[in-house]
Image (tube, rainbow, N blue to C red):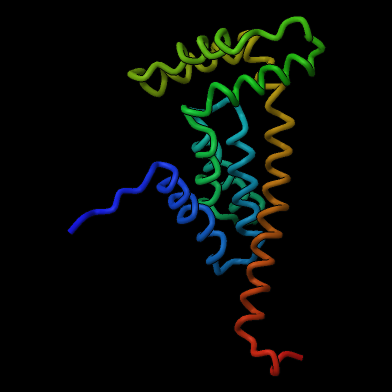
Length: 190
């Protein structure tokens, strides 16, 4: 018997479908539950805090659940956090940096991509522990580059959270409405 191998693109689509789309569609909760999860995940995914995003999404989820009594999907939040990762870090951070420099009015100081990623690669040493990584990331964020990154991520982080909430809410509501229509026979509908 021959085992069929799938390309990495097919495996990625399948992973996204099973980890993002199907949990959105099959949730027994109201649509706002999934939408808040997507908003929390995107809020932290679009920040320059890659080693800590999952912890921050978990803390935000807990604060929403127990502090504000607004429950949301932790699974969906964590899945959306994975949209930025060590592979996508360089381009995403560069966009944050350039945006931050423009927001600060520093049009003449738009450092090249290589200069930005070199500093972050040094901060994220593979064999460093959590504490050492936290110190290195904090030092990078405190630097001049970090200030531009922190400011530049705000429009994407806040906008991504709002857009993620709205689109997820619309997507889940539409799916649930279509499902209700399929389950109710045409002649039984009022």
